[in-house]
Image (cartoon, rainbow, N blue to C red; front, side):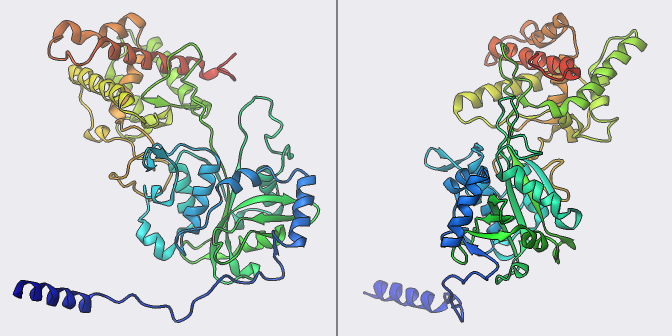
Length: 451
């Protein structure tokens, strides 16, 4: 009996000492839209929608509406806007959501921000652009203070109007030209309560020169039309957190791996696109000059010096390609792990001198988020591969075919039994990785790799 009494007393004491949640002095259920805004569901809003449909201004509407959701925290407008757009662009987060399913949610956006802090303060326009780039998006970010209303209108049309002038809507290349527009604006200018806010723009009506905002704070305002000039004015006020104006960003996703050429195996370590060609051409010139001016063979040290800029930039190698996307099953993980294990063993066999910083894997935020550091405990969309490993594979790509094969298979002659777990398949994969890079470098002068 005494034990039971003790437990009850302890429980009561804990209950008394537990912090009592602070109850808001006032609560709210939604807000009426100001006269300058037109609710999408109103008769006037539907008429504008019909007009936008007639002028082909609904390109973004349907994919965004499929993913449109309410922000789960009062200050989560930025993360939720990005999640809606990521899912509309069909970007694979390479991380599970629930059960076996991979899907974006706000909790996945913790690579370079503290989400607990975001719950209190929200995010700035610069951080929004950083988070988007971390997820593999191409971001065309513009401050309102550095753009004209015509610049903003062109961006709206690129995102919302099919075959709009200046967009790639009539591109015959067959590539997906989907772009979505996110706006970071000041609610006060629009006549709404609150201050800084993010939302996606889903449609444009040329007749009324207005845009449709899918307000992520649906507990406050539903989707509504805003005159474009008014939204442009709302981009101008300075955000006190940054000392800069707010802005708008066109977001797109292009998984165009130019090292995955038809007829050749896909790389498991690296991915790239044509935007990397200028640096590839620099390296191509470096190789040509080396063989012209030197009788000595190309060494790993030569290549290491080039891709670290003489030891000044440990991440310069990532200007030629990026780490490949993370595997999504155990078989793929094993292939990557074995490939990296063999590369590391071959590097050790070179007895080369190198900076220890080259052993650190590239964070997602390198070259994307100035002043930010990725959280190493957060799973990345990319595999973990170090600059040193990447530079070594580029070195292999720079050798003649017979030299490359001899170097990669060197361990089979020296210590076959010790590395029995690394099969010939892995050796051939490393040779393939080098050949793909060699192809990309050689083709960097061409306008189209598929010619």
